[in-house]
Length: 259
Ligand SMILES: Nc1ncnc2c1ncn2[C@@H]1O[C@H](COP(=O)(O)OP(=O)(O)OP(=O)(O)O)[C@@H](O)[C@H]1O
Ligand SMILES: [Mg+2]
Image (cartoon, rainbow, N blue to C red):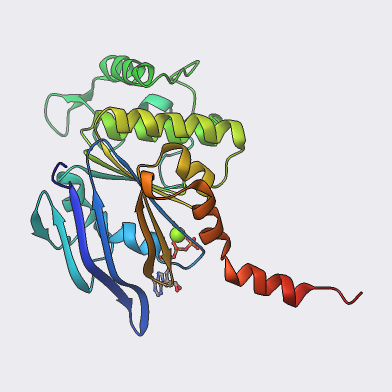
């Protein structure tokens, strides 16, 4: 097995008196999709905020390429190739597709303050990179807000791949999408995996996870209650665990109607 790109050992995070995450171990490897599942409030977002440098962990250790890290900002994580695609924050809706692709990393010629943007080149690269991932956008000049939610996610993924991400974190990328669009996004997740990235996929949906996942972690109240490789778990196991297993049986009893 290759050395993990990112490794969490006994990681925890408190928000004041609230223990959002406790003693979590996780290994993210190149060319694999690691799925993190869990109910609302399980600690999924907290976990990825630690890896993406948004909120530092308060216990345990975070290693990138085997080296201990304590990120002070998302920039530090990004500089090590850890990119995060958030459901809503990925794009600026009113800006063109190609502008969004280069947002914050525009190509310029000359020096500030007279620097000109190399528009034609940026359009060409955006077009080429989107095609490489199999994403077809009719017109790169259209505002990205006119694309579907699924297409927007795909542009954000292609962008992260182009700018050299080695670890790609996706927080609930299919949560707001229908079946067909979810399928498109899952295809790009698979493409990013095949390009050799280590992908962390956060989701509520065990079916989506099982379609692309190599490794599954289920969080409950901030701790991992399941940690298995693909060979060691079935879709049914994931679904039962996610549905709450015993809790659902109890709920069924409580909701039983008097006959
Ligand atoms: N900034 C914060 N301040 C205080 N408590 C927080 C903060 N962020 C998260 N929490 C708490 O930490 C716990 C885990 O939250 P987190 O957002 O990580 O869950 P999640 O698994 O992402 O849930 P969801 O599926 O609803 O997105 C929750 O109890 C939440 O209330
Ligand atoms: Mg969340």
